[in-house]
Amino acid sequence: MLCAYIFLLLTLSRVGLGSLQDKQNDFGMKVFFQLSQGSVDKNVALSPYGVASILSMAQLGAAGNTRKALTAAMGFSLQERGTSRRQRLLQRDLSSEEGVELASGVMVERKMSLEKGYRRALAKAFQTHPNQVDFTKTDEAVAIINSWVSDHTAGAIPEFLASGSLSDETRLVLLNALHFQGLWKVPFDPKFTQERMFHCANGSTVPVHMMRLTNYFNYGEFVTPDGVDYDVIEVPYEGDSLSMLLVSPFEPEVPLSVLSADVNSQRIQQWRAELRKVKRQLAMPRFTLDSEVNLKTALLEMGLGDMFNLASADFTRITTDERLCVSKVLQSVKIEVNERGTKAAAATAAVMFSRMAVEEITLDRPFLFLIQHKHTGAVLFMGHFNQPQQQ
Image (cartoon, rainbow, N blue to C red; front, side):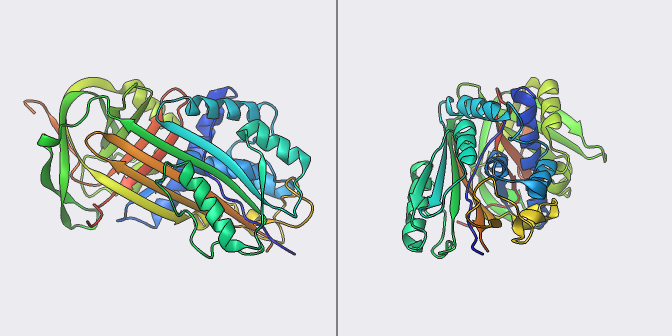
């Protein structure tokens, strides 16, 4: 029995555009929470949109118990009538935003045939068609995929797959890349950037370049069901269609996992409904995050072990030529935040094988951030900033 690989990245979509999008957000944020459990004092970055997208593409090819498990864990099914169209509309809405680029691709082993229904489903939901690749030439295949990802992330992720990531048993690679570059609506003036101490999650202190801006922000104070107080401040990008939400506990010893455990689409909607415009001086670090993760363990914890098991995985809606299963799910994220704005890119892969005067808000301690497209509600990126990376 041979195996195959699937690589991907991002997606979303109310039994209108909203509820599907909410469910995809919620699924992606649950994966983030699972991932962050093992990284209490480390930086973590993820594209919830990308995780939902990659597994949506795999879900389109699932049958039997594998389909049931994916649908139960994700909370929605793209195989249901009308959802593929909503997925396509969502992708179209995101792609139409200035500064946002989305792309989907399918690389299939040249000797393997895909089911016609799967080809149609991919075209309908993700507007993509298969390209043949010779996976027996593994180095060439890695180079082809890395070139595709680099081209669709403006060069931000030039080497998504390491040498040796593929084998001659690779059969299918589903790709989706997301690139975002946005300028702040009101930029931070570099002359006000000062070196200040950041209090890391592990108890140490590290000097950082702290950006400062006095302006009117949407701001609110909230409390988790367990009684943890925190605040949320929104920093909009030029055009107002995307923004960064900065979430920080009042008490510095509170781990960020307490906050991320409470973050879902409903909570974000509550924030947006209750935020009020107030004048604040915001001080936040200038930072860069690079994250490369294998999400297999997180997905196993969420009850998706079936699709990783060659004996039980059922992807017969993709092909009946060979039995397929998922061996790993990879995502690479790069985020750069400075005085001018934000650059962010993500690539995700599921591998199948057969086989004061103004009050000051100072983020000088760990904080949670989310980059959201306000019209669709899609959470493109989120992360824990626990400590500055060593220069």
